[in-house]
Length: 102
Image 1 (spheres, rainbow, N blue to C red):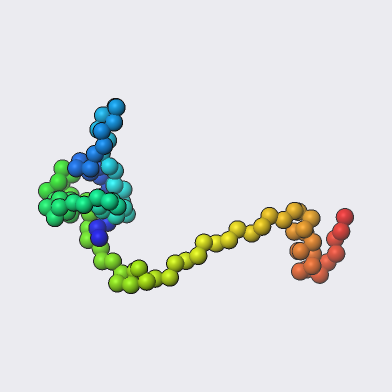
Image 2 (image 1 turned 90 degrees about the vertical axis):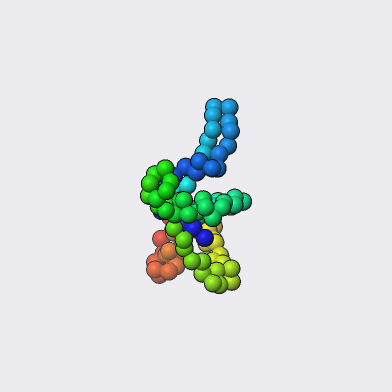
C-alpha cells in the first residue's frame, strides 16, 4: 500500500466533463491508488521517485499491519438521550444530595 506524501493531481486518472478534463486529486495521507483503480509498477516508480512532473516523490510505500483485518472494530459512541432541563436538574440534585424543586 502507498500513502501520498505530497498533494498532486493524477494525470492518468481523469474524468471528462462538459467544462473540460478533471484529474483526480490526491491529498497528503490518502491511499494510492484509490479504491477500484489499478496502476502499473512503472507508474508507482514514477510517483515514488523524482521522474514525475513535480520532480519530487509524491507517494511512499507503507507496510500494512499483518492482522489489520482481524483487528476488532471500535463501536461507534452512542449519543445520550436528550432530557428536558427539569429531568437533568433533578438527576444532578439526586447526585449532589440537594433538593431544588421549583
